[in-house]
Image 1: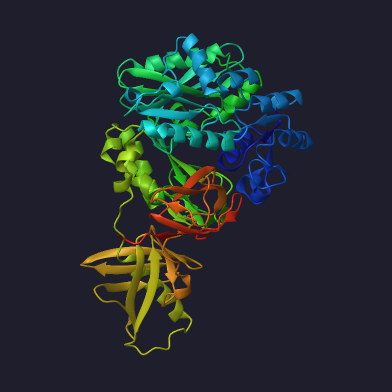
Image 2: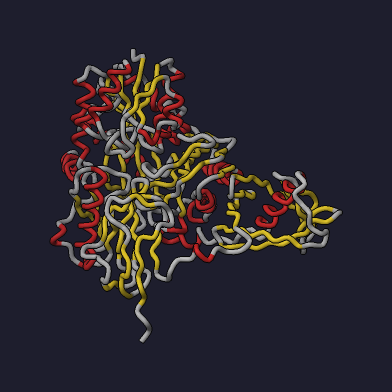
Length: 623
């Protein structure tokens, strides 16, 4: 029996594994980087061991340091979580060679599926249907579109859709560079890209005695940058017979490599066609929807298999439907730019919330931008979707910009509610889903709440009739509001102020009473779901940048600069000039206009803050 477990990971998944360990009375050990010294997973573990450094390369990707930490802390077993070293066969071997229990599949099984190209060869030999790779040098117009994929790793890194033959060479190079940076392996391959395909996967659990169980299906079609955003179980509206074929292929894949533990076999489904994509030899991010539908604990099953237990009987029968949404600190309207800063408040009551953050925690630049996974379970799909959308809409999220509004609108989109979605959902609908009208009364509510707070402490010395002005910035631009502080109380043109307190303002607008919950953190004000930044009454002229300035859209590291780019270089509008790396993703900074690069401040490896001046492009004068 395992009595202590080190989780070779961080954040949400470390907290998730610790939760099951506590329920089973297993002692927990965390590892943490310097950036994670005060992170939640570090705080909730029974023991924590420091990994010196801040970046993943220095810390969570150093297998020898993690094995040493496990031995130092007296852990008996190592759980890899997902990401980082979870699918690294050499790490699994190092754990076993150190006399520790590896809570995962055999290293040989990991190795067999580590390369997507090798995995496809094995699956083809086992009779599993798949998309055959294409020779990059032989791709023709007739083959388009195609998908460039990294042979190692996952999470959407090293993947590119190519629709123009002229772009293939540059996209192969870009994907290889990104894959090398993310996984230490720049090998990429090309396969056909299936338009309107659905991403459907099968959760399997296998013991060490030859039993393999398949737990239904999951649909993970809603993706951004090939990373999943919304997942559900079971996969809805599959053609007759498809689920049985998926189960058969998934169990065949597991048996082919003598698998043990929890894993996921991923497929691309288009109508009646089923194509093997890859096998993830670890626990998936989206495993909670399967747990909800089958009433199981997949981490507990992993521990049981690692202890040598048998899977007796049959898998439990599924019940109802579950939907999961990944809440990210990112701005979908700004090319999914990751966000950093203090998470003042995170509360999504009434549903399951798996997270690695608590109120007051800092969201940094070194790791994935996911804040939490929100999961709703109900008797029917429609009920589960409605419940999740409602919970997210009512959630309190104060801090960096998130994708919360996008999630709510996605869940309520007709294509999703009628189960007609596919992997290109956001390619078609992102603009509409991120185009919203601001709440015109949120700035006024913020100003009235602030005015109430000031008046309580004797801060007002103006004449009763003197109008007051406040300025705010939101995602929709700048807002200026006016109100008066009279002997009768606070008044504003066009609305009736029924009450105004520091945390709640009630207005009557065209005969309709509306409530506005208000919370302030320094210069940020949150009014219901609207985030506002307090601005000075008069703009600061020194804050203005020269036309053509390229500013860092997020904090991060300058990954690279376009070949040959120097001051004086001629650039074309849309040319990629600088690549920033932030939260495990690369972000391309392009020329805003055709002209000349008159300044270049960015250098590879440089750490930059949001708004930092990277370069300046002087636009060519019109002819």
